[in-house]
Figure 1 (cartoon, rainbow, N blue to C red):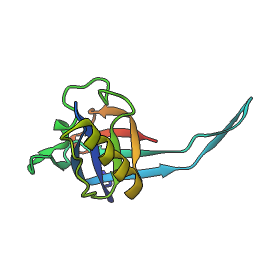
Figure 2 (tube, helix red, strand yellow):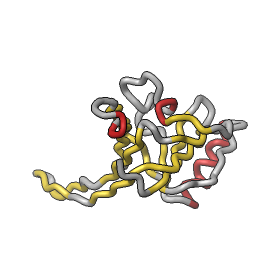
Figure 3 (spheres, rainbow, N blue to C red):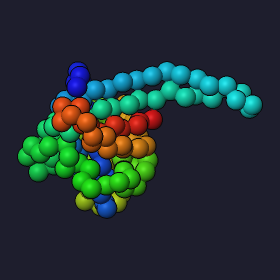
Figure 4 (cartoon, helix red, strand yellow):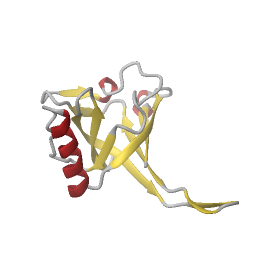
Length: 139
């Protein structure tokens, strides 16, 4: 599988967000538009492919296979439109000490980086081992 990019996932936990760095992924942006009865509607988006065999840097500083990012989830993310992704290796760490600190961290992150929302994660774990992957639909 082609992996020409890296990304950083910020997955929502109870208090704030945890950072996961994925050093090998395929980032694909598309610009499209569709016309409906009410006029023009934007249809562009981003799709990120993470190989099942890719290693991910977890918040504890250890490398784990990407399969540990979304373990046994049939529908992911657990809370749709709350997980975030940034292209490249982002070094931003959330202050999850209080709800106010987490909110301030979120505001600061949105001001400093191009942050996208993970809308859907599809587990495409069939076929040959080298082609199994996770497909993230991002907006």
